[in-house]
Length: 420
Image 1 (cartoon, rainbow, N blue to C red):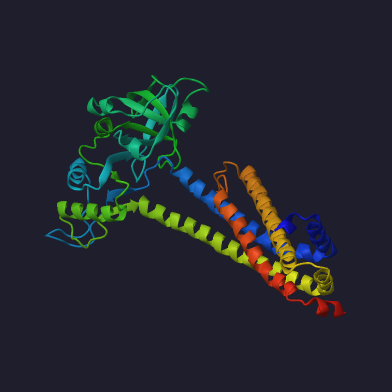
Image 2 (cartoon, rainbow, N blue to C red; image 1 turned 90 degrees about the vertical axis):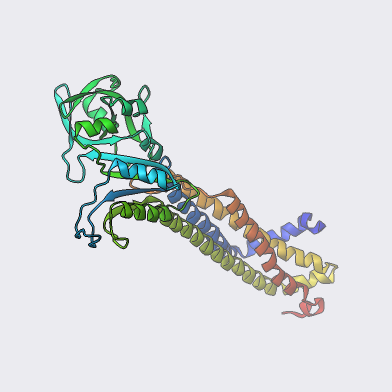
C-alpha cells in the first residue's frame, strides 16, 4: 500500500490525466451529472415536503370535517331528499360512543354557505365579515397565532355567554392604526357590542383566513338564533387511529341516529384531511424515490464511462506498462495506480456534483424565499444521503477500476515491449 503515498504514483496519474484532458473531462461529467441530479431532485422533494408541512404545522392532520346534506334513498317511511340537521346532541353522542375521537368541535358560521356575513362596526368604519361560533377546542385542532396581550376564546366565555370576540389580522389593519392596541376595545357586530380580547393570524394553513371573527359558541347561538343547531363539526382522531376508519364509524352512527339508509352516501358530507395528507405524503415519497432511482442510475452510467476510458488508457499505455513491469514494478503497483486513478476521478466528480447541486438549491431558496406562490421551502438534502452517495461512487469507482487494472496486470512485459 506504500505506493499510494509514493510521489511518483501521483505524478504518473497527473501526467495521464493532463495528456487526455478533454477526454477526462467528458468522462467525469457522467458522475458529476449523476450526483448533481441526485442532490437537485432530493433537495426539491425536501423543499416540497417542507412547504407542505409549514402549511399544516399547527393543524391536526388526522382530522375530518362533517356536515349534513340531503338523503338520496327513501328509508323507514321517510322520502328521499330529507335535509340532515346536525345538532349538539349529535356531538355529545359521537363523543360518548366512539373512542377513536380525541377532539370534536361543533362550529357555526355566518357569511358562508349562503348565509349573510356579520356586520362589523368600529366608530365610523364598517365592514362585512365571516363570523364563527366556536369552542376553545377548535384552537387545538387549528392553532391560531394570537398577538401579544390577547387570547383566544376560553371556557368561561362559553359558560357565561360572554360578548367577547377575536378578530383577524386583516380586520385589525382595516379598522386600527399601526401599533394601536385593539385589546379591550368595544366594537359592534350585528348591532351588539362586543369586547375585543384577541387578534389572530392563521398558523400555517388556516381555513378561516385572517379576515374572520370568532365568538364564543354559546354567544353565537343566542345572537344569531341558532338554538341547538350546528353548521358542521371538526373531528380529530387519536394519532394511532386510522381517520378513514373513524370516518366510516362516525357516519354509520349518525345514520342510525337519524334513521338514514345504511347505503346512503349523500346524507352526510365530509372532507377527510388525513386521507388527503396521506396522498400528498405518498406523492412526496414518490418524488424522493425518483430522485434516488434517477440519481443512482446516472451515477452508475458515469462510473461505467470512467471504466471505459481507463480501458482505453491502458490500451494506449501498453508499452509504458511493459517497461515498468520490466524494470521491476509489481502487479499490485500497476493495479493500484489504475484503481487510484479510477477512485480519484469518481470522487472529484462526485464532490463537484454535490457542490454545484448545493449552490443551485441555495440559489432557489434565495430567489423563492417565502413566496407563497412557489410551493418550495428551504430545499435541502440530508447529508447522510449525500455521504452515502459519495461513498457509493467511491466503491463503484474502485470496483470498475478493477477491470482496467486487471487488464494492465495481464499484459506480459515482453509482449508490451513488442507493441508498436
